Amino acid sequence: MKERPTTQQVLAQLERIEASALFAKSPKKKHLLRFIVESALEHKAISEKDIGPVVFPPFDPEQNPVRVQALNVRKRLEEYYEKLGKGDLVEIGIEPGAGYEAEFSYSDRSEVLTHVKKAIAHRNRLWFGLFNGALFEIFLVCRDAPEFAPGHALYAEIDVIQKVVWGIFGISKPTSIYHTDDAEAKQSVQLDANLCFGHIMLGTHSLLSLNWSAARDSFNTAMKIDRVMTEMSLWYALYLLVIGKTRKALEIAKINVKEHPDGRGVWLVYSLFLYLTRNYEEARDAASEVSVIAGPMRRLQELLMGLIFMELRDYGKALGYFEAASATTGREWHTVNLEWKLLRKEKDFVLRRARYIGFMCLCLARSGQHDRLRKRLDELNRLYAVSDAVEIRPMQRALIYMACGGGHRALTALRIACLRGDAFVLGLHLCPFLDQLRDHPRFIRLMERFQPPQQKN
Image (cartoon, rainbow, N blue to C red; front, side):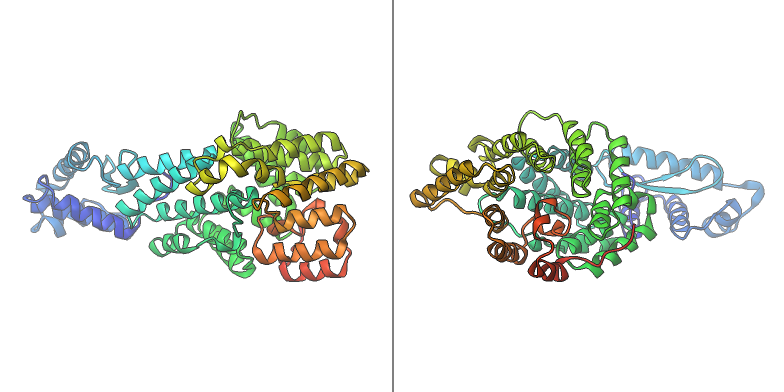
């Protein structure tokens, strides 16, 4: 990994090495290793003249033992990591040559990083059952290596992705984006104040909580630590998009697409950014690049394509995509939790028919298909009459009222969506499907409360 171990982690690993059988009975080798390691931690360049008088007094330059002893220490370190410490998280090495410079890294062979890689693999696949797998793997990381700051930052990221995506799909019960817990992100920067990724995730949590000043401070700190890494982060790009720096946000997303041409999630994010900035044809082309067979990523793609085609006024395709996005089967969701398993048999049909009913109604109203709109609303009323499983989320209810011309009711439902932390709230001032409400005084007041201070491109 790119991140380096903290000073505390290096010193703890040094003590572990010194206590091993390879070093415990060799005080000179221990002393030499500690001197080189501590000098590196203090960013001091050292030579034989610096080492000799401290480690091998009285030091005779003509009978210089430093080079030979350093070679022996290097060999014992290599032997330690081949046998005793092959599963250790932190790796200490000494650069070959006469520089006597120690290097510190996280070992790819460690069990902790194995769990990290599995968690990242689960996260990248965006499959709901695997979110639990990702959280389990990263839980093992934080349990086995509580001092491993990147593990806590990754835990924070997986938690954010899960709650935002679950919020969009409305799984089992409404999920508020305000309820993301920033404890793991805070823990990561407490362990390592120079962990750029930790500050990025802390900024993301603040962004989702609509705490604009805290988000700004965290992202500014990340920029100071590692500008390149921050400017490659899609979380930072989201922050820029929300505060009005759309050009820079699109530039970051486009760079990510070029760097990861096979990254399905990256293409979806790029398409979403293009949609929110009213570049509909480009958004359609970008979303079409995502070729997936099944699962939640496909549903996200179908939802986004429906929104794009609605703005392109191709209402037939838009309705088809909204229907497809709503038709998530019980089989795809059965790993989410026990509650969903119990709901599956008798309520899944009802739930999926109502999931994006607001978008469908708005699409029918815009296309002038008022007869179909009435039939859809009659169907919804029948579902309400026969089952208590129908739960129309406030944002979808607002869209239904918009489709029926009820502006005030739509704004009331929209306000409830804002207060509950609907997943769409973060882009409330950006969402094209809300444009018909933007000039209403009540909508303007909502924007004053929930929109961040805008900055120029």
